[in-house]
Image (tube, rainbow, N blue to C red; front, side):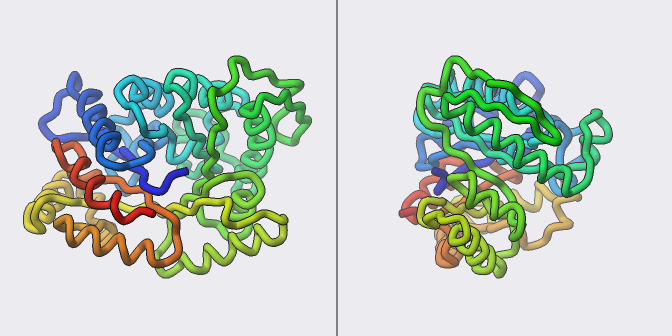
Length: 316
């Protein structure tokens, strides 16, 4: 499972024309592949998120992109962080993840969540519904997708989805790990305990112990061994050979993307020694690993390589 994942969250790179966009993404994935990351992840969104840019900034559909990246990488698993369940019928998602597994030689991972970005839903015609609706849909979807990935033929007459002996052929080449994203203590972490191999948390650092305690409680209630579940934590980093270079690259990013300024202190910034020290503190909270994105400077050649070489020795 993911103990050191590199997420590519944005495709807006200064001075890079459209015909160099995909090669720039490939460069990041290849550097992650060779520097110690175990997973490369991309967001499943159609519009850029408010904290990262304007809605109309470039966003590449994640499963097409992951399948393409499979042809340029050799070792890393490939995943969405995370798939919005509301965007696809569960049977289609099972087929897409399986196709990714086949074309990558058995390196697919399913990252999934309930969905939350209301603007995308309203603008593009996806039903958003209530918070309760989205979590009901996610649980029904898992009851369809997971058996299909295991080679079973599920039937479900649910409130939101109906399938009859859903067939998935060809089957995945290997068992596909399942990550559920989110930190909700009542619903999300209970689903992690019941269905998933991994929890990816997005929360304040000070809240991590409480989230881990909640997950352990759900595992106890369901008779699940908590040690079977990997817990990763989502982070943002801006690394460079020196602190001054890293800070300058972050400042340049904020200058061209003012929305990023609304999240002061959210990124870990600095030289390799500074970044390593910050992640050592994070890992001491009890999490098993981290997912890292680098929207400010991941597109600069060598930065992802440096990030992986800095963080990989910290992961046990």
